[in-house]
Image 1: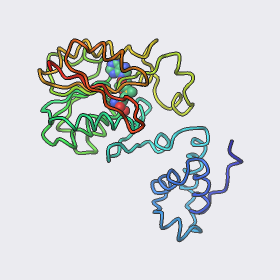
Image 2: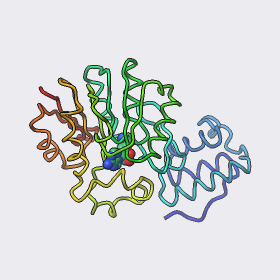
Image 3: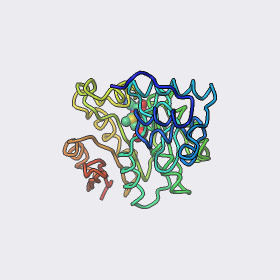
Length: 278
Ligand SMILES: C[S@@+](CC[C@H](N)C(=O)[O-])C[C@H]1O[C@@H](n2cnc3c(N)ncnc32)[C@H](O)[C@@H]1O
């Protein structure tokens, strides 16, 4: 798909090589982070030589990008809701679609306590804590490595004192606490579809962050049964859903109270909001 690896001795050459693989915006971001170069530097001084270290790093980056790795995964960091989140092999790379869930949560009243099930990088819980300065969160995940990354992200954002972490299977590790807001973006891709995903998704994100079981709904079954126990009366639970999963997840939540559905920017049904006890 791409030609032989090009020379990348200068800013301009590196920009052209990167842009061919990841487009103009991706190339600008890569050069900003790897070479500290602003767009004005690339335009005004394209002949600026790059140090051997930066050239070597960019050559490694280009090899991964050409193999299909997304820029965020190569850089080990991803922007979400205006902040930066470090990634690790145990975390999903946060997706822009998940910002729909954060926006839907913020449209409601500020909760004192938030529960984030399957936190990954911590992007949902930490974004909400940044927006609600009086809130506190418990973030869970089954992957200890993901929790370590989320903890580091909390510290980097100055939020460590307002978040706690628990490792285990969905609500089972939460104990008897109750929360005014529950949020979750669980794995929801049916197992048989995993092999059909683009290589950059299949090989870069951990399988446990993607695989929702035979019909994609295993995690919802496990989470929804615990909502009456964990959600405070009058509270809200927001669950991200995959394509075509609205009716099934809505049916699971039917007896708990009214349900609202939020669409993402592509007008796909993306988030189910359960209002506990009406
Ligand atoms: C789709 S990722 C979402 C990560 C993050 N919340 C986000 O939106 O980017 C799902 C997360 O659920 C976690 N997970 C998978 N199975 C789990 C289980 N049985 N109990 C708790 N967490 C689980 C994964 O490790 C992963 O971090």
